[in-house]
Length: 381
Image (cartoon, rainbow, N blue to C red):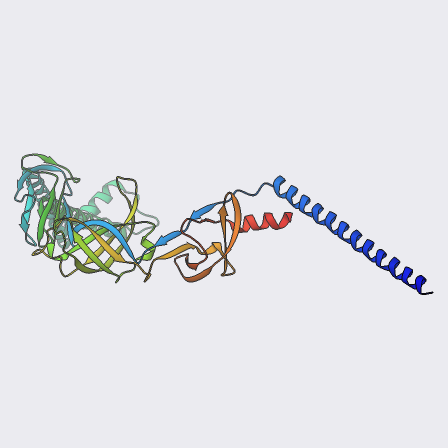
């Protein structure tokens, strides 16, 4: 009896071992099949085209080159062409507000003005005569006689007196209109004479002249530039990718090339909205920095130099496009041609850029179309 019980026990243990072995084999086969199918699908699947962007590293200070400039400038042009009769200044000369700096030959303009004055006098005489004739009843008599001779049948719809009155009124009105038009022509000719003189609207220095001597013909495109040194600033060319991280009021350190070792402290005063393409092809924006140390006693207009502008960040940071940060914690990057998700810690967000405190390196390529990549991956897995 005891041996039979032992035999049954051994049979149960052997059966259990066989079941475990079968389970292990089945599990192994399923696992290998799953690995094979996933590997096969991944190798056969073509990922969508990924678009990437470099992680942008922004320092606490932004370096830019520039030159001393004047915010208060005047570009002077003749509004009409002609022969230049007088040029009283040259580049570098100081001028005062209201000073005449250049004039055109005005002989033709003066003759035009005299002709317009003569025409005005003729028109005025005609208007005076028409008004006097109206008051004396001469115009009415002339119109009545004319109508009696040309229209002996009379008027069926309009009384003759009304016709006479309207004609007299038109004669006087036309004479007055002709006088007024002649006066307008005089004003235009006189204004042309005034435009023949260029006067400085500001106190300043002549920075540039398209013409250097009198006796030559000029056009409205001929320009004389005057700048006010008392409004001196440092105009920096800030790269397009850096401009979102600079604000008016940020501090700056100016270093002029002619004053090695000297640092002039200032603040960002104005950021111009128009982009400029430099001869090198680089896109920049003009940023004006005001500084008490920039004045006619310490610097001259046109001096080159560099400036360090404090950015909107207190320390060096990494930035990525805000839309690439998913759930405020994840960013997809491209590594060895494959999309990889990384967990990150984010900071502030400004102008569509999010600060990355940890989780990325400056060399990472951030996938800028993560939704497309994710949707394709999840559709196949």
